[in-house]
Image (cartoon, rainbow, N blue to C red; front, side, top):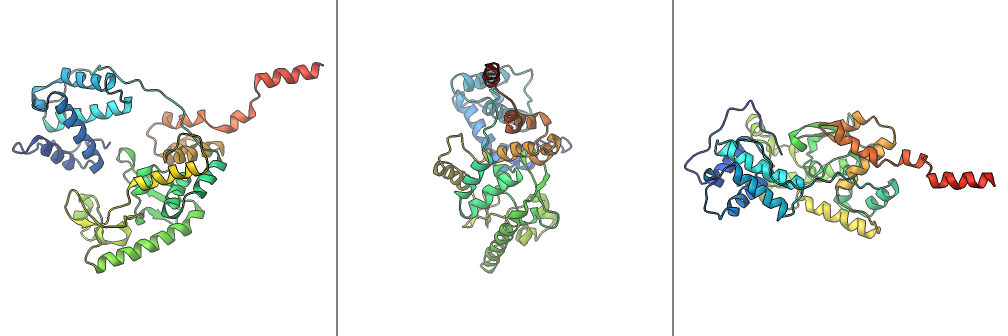
Length: 342
């Protein structure tokens, strides 16, 4: 979720609007992502309905919030990260919409967070999986593994994010709204060039039919009035059909849905008989693990992955295979010794 810019002056929503309209107004003022707007709205509504749906949050307080969060953990059986997400949404409601910051520390019954090593694939398994995916999804999967991209970072790539000259991919607005640079695999350059050529052809068709705009942040749209129609700002993986933007109401071409790539990865795992927990993140985890096995410095890997803290990156040291293979089981040592003594 995007962190609010502390330098932005406090915004007060229109008091004549309904509560959820006020929530949306504040979220958009602070430039939260549309996905965050949806999630926060869902949690705020769930919080209201938990107390019957008729009590305004102004009449509720910190004790009620704790009660709601404890209910999510004990009855809802939600994960620790989901509980934190709900808390973030409610804190936002009181702090930024109602201007009534919640007082005191929160000590609800918390969902237990279990730290487990990430599931990774061997290089052979990665090769098999990528070989089982076809079409545009194959290129997207290769970017997840070859560049260490998150799912939505790949989905939201634009043409101007690809720097062929430097051999880099510029990731704008990653997790936490942060930008970073990662590598562009040389053996993907030709495939990406072909994809860009297809996007240009589709964009030219849109322009001829009176369309051709894509979503860009409002600040950029005001500064560069024609940017939304320029080739460089087009999505690298555009949707097949145009759709109406939920915020502006303008008909434009959005990027593809992430569900298509998710389904393609799951199908590939089934096809190759992979008996591991599967998802798009498994390719990013495999990228990180294989980079460490190849001797990449963990600080460099941290930058490539976009981790704020190196401790997050260190979790991959628990699953690298290089050091494990060099170890000898005490059982093998025991029997080897016994054989020599005989």
